Length: 297
Image (cartoon, rainbow, N blue to C red):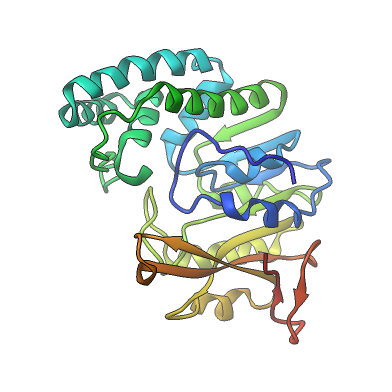
């Protein structure tokens, strides 16, 4: 497995730990277009690195950031100088300056301000209120932007910046229904929408109607697809697996989320990769071939 590159924008539910499992099961010849209707962090598509891609998201700020990189309005050296300057102000002024930048971003929507907030906020959360304003509180780390941390972010920006300049990639702020409708027979669709029944997502909401709509579109698409969702946790199973998705191939993978230092705070969740073609790489097969194909790392 090649090195996993972490994108510069952090989002809830980033698929870093699942990248090996996802990439080894992608059935995409790269002759067609890679279509990703829920860009989020972009970690899957950026690591797959297809020659032609359509990335979309309803969050305009994510799309604006990557379009600014594509148009070279933002460069790695721009990011370094910006974070050095803003990081020094945060160190000197403290929490008050974070909220000053947050207010400035909500007025002007500068992509660099978003990057700063994304890395200085509480727990790297990407969240907006109903008016579309970024509302995540300060992460209580005035010394956040050390030289090493800035270099780390700049390297992440550099990775995406270099790819964007040589690939035929487009970034659109559009609803998933419009994006999936464009898919043709040789294309590949990767969908990572907000997990229904788990939490409110970072921009807008996700309803059962959305889940039903995306199921209908993927059921009828001519392209191959992978759909990411949750299968179960220790308390309950995702009811929509049986309601909509059981007709497809499903790969399960269990891993842990740590929300504290004590074992009793540790929670596990079983992730599901749902696809309309047989999985490429699995370690064991469930006894019911019509229901689950199980992969455990």
